[in-house]
Amino acid sequence: MTPDDELKSVWKAQPLPRQITISADVLLQQLRGNKARFNSEILWSAVFMILGLVVFAFMCIGFGIFCMVRRGAPWEAMSGFFFLGILLLAIAAYTALDRYRHVRRVSLSAPVLACAEESLALMQHEIQLWGNVLWWYLLPLALGVEASVLALAWAKGVHWLVSPLALRMLGIMVIITVGGSWFSRWYLRTYYEPRRQELEALLRELKSQ
Image 1 (cartoon, rainbow, N blue to C red):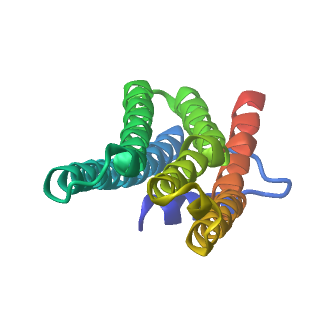
Image 2 (image 1 turned 180 degrees about the vertical axis):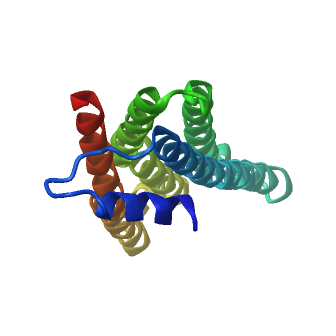
Image 3 (image 1 turned 30 degrees about the vertical axis):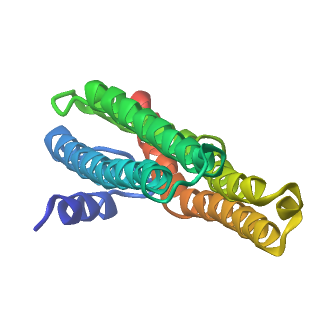
């Protein structure tokens, strides 16, 4: 029987209205296991995200340098790619700093109440972080991509700023930005909010004992 099954069976065996009278060791084992899995989940996703951002950033910067050196492209045309690369590196640095601060806060040896409070604090931080994904990730990324298109258009002539390509790219970036923000909020409501509410209910029960 897994810790999850044991915790559920003990909980269902309690008389109504149910009170938390289960073993502190079982509850602590459950909380520590959930927190360890949650930490592993968000840290590994951050690692892949940071690696992807860094690789894409150097690809943009390398493409700009290649076009300037080998193709003789003017720096004005490539400035958008350099700007996009810098934005991607800034997003990666922000994500890495946030994950580093997250790791320093994590303690897997805390007692039951402290473990529950720490789990709730980490969950609330993730909800706040991804709830603001529009400002620190989606919008800078959209602005960087649009800047690359506009820089190419500017190098070909001012009238290219209202060309079908520039307008289509602007529309695509708006759709991706709005859609990404909506998806993030939906994901938080569907998967993170129920877990946060469960932790808040558990903390209220523990503090009432």
